[in-house]
Length: 252
DNA sequence: GAACAGGTGAAGT
DNA sequence: ACTTCACCTGTT
Image (tube, rainbow, N blue to C red; front, side, top):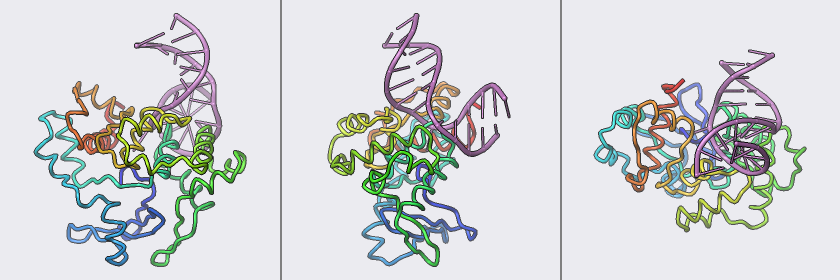
């Protein structure tokens, strides 16, 4: 839920969201995750999207005895990294630069509700994330309504490139290094955004995005962390750290 | 109303 | 190679 901007809490405690063109309601019942829809849809979509087959508890045994890492692990217990669509992840993290989470959300929501396809789920209407082609068909001034400032140009240029044939999904099969370099060739994508897309959009769990919160937390606790020592759990460690640092406002 | 926000890229040392 | 700054705009 942390790095995903499209699941909204509902009055009854459940969450409503859209992913990969499908809508669902999710809630917790007796400590277990429940997802609306039929078993076929679960197998096809949600099982991999919510990353339900990974052993997140492996970190309990692997996490070094470093104060802040242990605190983060205890605090964020239960977190999962969602397998977002690469294009949606790319846009979301382009919007995220120098922005607060509520504003990122509102930019994405206005984009989706204006351009996405409507999907009904249990009486609610939600909207899919617009494809690159849908966005590429518009001009910069057409897109002014999303109020994303200078980031709109980045997203429009990326949309034109992806709609023109750049295959983001194909990067899943490449090495993290190759995919990172490819992502950083987009205007407005630097190391941090690229690493977020690697982790949340391309399933590269060795990616460890370093943002201001991670930087501050590590420096306040004067902790030395070598992401590569975590192997394919680096991204999950990063999520624990981020969530803890952000919630505690470490360094503020 | 200034300062800042889950960065980036260009220009300046 | 390291430091500084502008970039759009909503919130604090």
